[in-house]
Image (tube, rainbow, N blue to C red; front, side, top):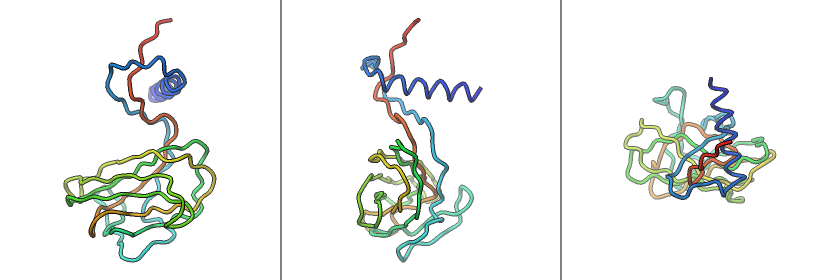
Length: 178
């Protein structure tokens, strides 16, 4: 049953993307995730700036904590298949500030390919998934997640990943009867 649903959603999203005239402008937004690369645990970085700590996670496993403005983590040799255009991250934020995750290629000041806002989640153990569009990313890269915002202790990061395909369709499609 799950395979049928996945096939339907994938087919629908690809069809709707290729035929925008079939989109009904009177309907609300829908969020569709087509496929996702395996999650990458934040604490499996290859290099990091000073100050962050690895803690036990309320969702199980570990997470990266004490993230301050200007901190960064680097993942060497991340292989991204063609077409991946969305970044998702699992975060928590127990303060009123939050921050931003910048995705950069090659160095902490390298090419910016995306920027993902992290808003307060109400508690350090309340985890939410945030996402943002990225410029097309493909091949093997050294990926830097650079954390920006105000103050110290901006948010925690559990894991992240990438998605492919139309992840947000602004309107629902009209039904077509054959």
